[in-house]
Length: 288
Ligand code: C2E
Ligand code: CA
Ligand code: CA
Ligand code: CA
Image 1 (cartoon, helix red, strand yellow):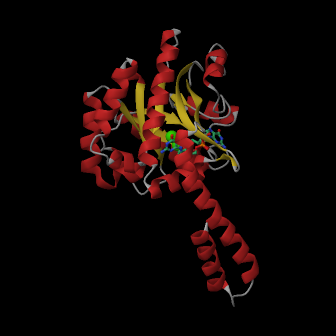
Image 2 (cartoon, rainbow, N blue to C red):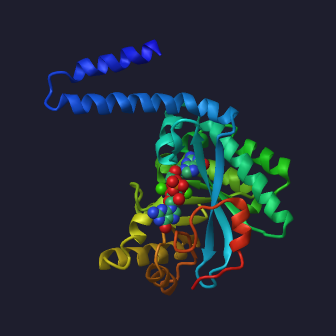
Image 3 (tube, protein in one colour):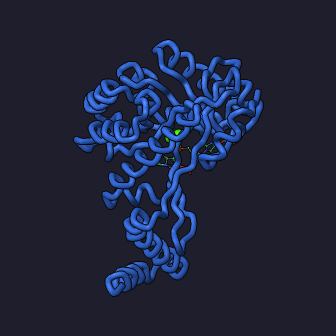
């Protein structure tokens, strides 16, 4: 706590003299304090069971049938309340605790999916994996161990990576190949937001392309975005990848994607991320 005070005090000094320093000072000190709480809190979170997963359904566009889910991490901090993964994942990456959290996520998602299978709901589950986890030399072995522990058919597990993992295509492909060898498939998340071009898809061993929400947002309002999304879908298809559109919020977007042969979709229009018991409940409901 003393160190904390000192750091905040230092920050105050640094800012002194600037215009509007008062406002900046308070904001920055609060931000540092919050970040610190999150960093320390994450270690506690694992021990105190503050983490849990919600599952967002993924549907087949043609039938509206739910075929799988994406596991999304949630953290209820005792004081800060619900903290978004957008905020705490980067901090977890910075502090190195992401690996431990990442394995907790894989365990929990695989365990839950096996429960669904026992109820004859043969859903696939996608887990988000940080670039740092991908670098762990035991990554594939650990996943294999979890699958064996819960006796889940490995073909139901999908690992979602972002384009940042692809900075080193050769290394990424090596790991992806190892994942394939144990029956696990790989999706590239947020496609189109990173630096990789469409042609890079050609060199990747991935199985699924997830078109980022920022494109889906404008498929109705912007003709340019509409053509771009059409191109991504066609390209992805021609390379034999599955295509998932994420962030579908309206019936118009849903119809556009269906008409343009996007096979799979995900978004609030179909369902928000929900608790595991709710997934089973809504599985009979279908949307156009
Ligand atoms: P993501 O992997 O791109 O996940 C999709 C995010 O968009 C989720 O936010 C989801 O709730 C939200 N979303 C889905 N459909 C819609 C929609 O129709 N409209 C809107 N406005 N939002 C929609 P969430 O759960 O807050 O997660 C944010 C990000 O945090 C994820 O983005 C992912 O990058 C990261 N994340 C979440 N869980 C994990 C995890 O277990 N491990 C790692 N490494 N990252 C995670
Ligand atoms: Ca994802
Ligand atoms: Ca995404
Ligand atoms: Ca994202």
